[in-house]
Length: 523
Figure 1 (cartoon, rainbow, N blue to C red):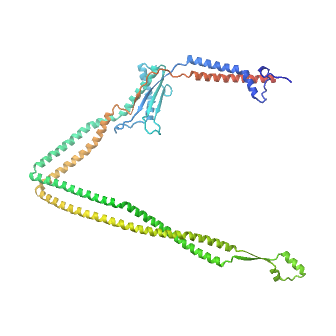
Figure 2 (spheres, rainbow, N blue to C red; figure 1 turned 30 degrees about the vertical axis):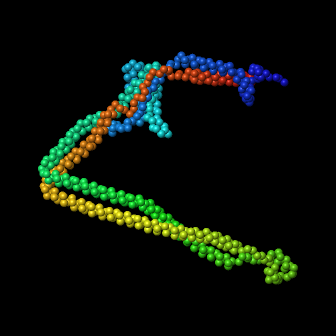
Figure 3 (spheres, rainbow, N blue to C red; figure 1 turned 135 degrees about the vertical axis):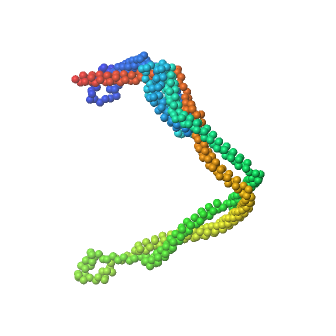
């Protein structure tokens, strides 16, 4: 027997390609090839790390934050506010990026051959509050730029944000300035015209008043005082009537009692229907029970069954008698007779018991429902009588108060008509002339006032729009400043990936060498 040294990989025989791969073969493979795999992995990692250290330049990141805060009071003349996504799209638009590049080149902060690209050296982020949060927080947009130096990155971001805010201001202004200018010009003209018309009316009224004598002032004052007194008395009477009626309803609890009565009547109707159904069913069951009991009495409990003699016995008897004639009456009596319980009687008995149980169950229910209906009838009648009495009292009270109000108004109206007749005797002619003139002036002033009120509402919007000039829904929360440290270049991660790739390459080379050695050994 030949001894094999497992500790010496060179002494182990080659593994055939068609042999089964074992754990021992894997251990031998790695003991033979670990230096190649580890060497390639270490070499690839070191080469990649050194190359990236000297060849990969540093990159600096700077960011500025824009806060979106809409005003609670906004003029209707201003264009609608953009959403936070709309502001982001405007910030990333080609026009804003192109103008930013032009300004940076003009200020010397960017080379002419350099490029600004969203998703490359420019990036934006949106921060909004979650739906689950009770407090709605103001959304924010973050503008991020990458540059070769910290100062250049900060300059790119600040210029980018500056161009964006100027573009937002231009959009918000739009046609607002022209509309505000038109309203500023028309509002004073309409206001002056309305003031002049009202002054003319006041002057005409003064002229009319000058034509009045001492009697005019006396009658006007007396009529005014009387109307005020009349209105006060009528209002006080109405208020007292409402107070008395409400107090009566509150003390007697009419609404609650009426609702209770309606509910009881509805329940009574439902129970009456149910009681009718139960009574009908009970009558049917009683008739069915009587019929079942009658049929049960008429049905016998047992029945007699006769079993005829068999053919074998018949032939045997005829053979024994040696004759073909048989005593059939005797043979019939020799048949087997048995008595059994009548199944019809059993079924009738079961049905009678079931119907009796149903009758026994329905009878107390019918009686109980009848008693409950009688109780509800008595309670409903009592409640109806009491409620009708209270409602009749309330109606009588309201009729009495209305009668008193009619008498009061008739007396006051008679006094007023007497005053008016006395006044008309002196002022009829002057009053007709004044009413015609005053009516025309009132209509003119009313038309002017409607136009002025409509323009005034627009004027307030214009003032609010002028006050909002320079105030945007989005503002710079924090400008960009040069960062202290550059962005991580990720050399360690990239070197580690290169080492893994080198190890895989070494593994493949070792695997190919092993396969080649096995083929050579077999040949």
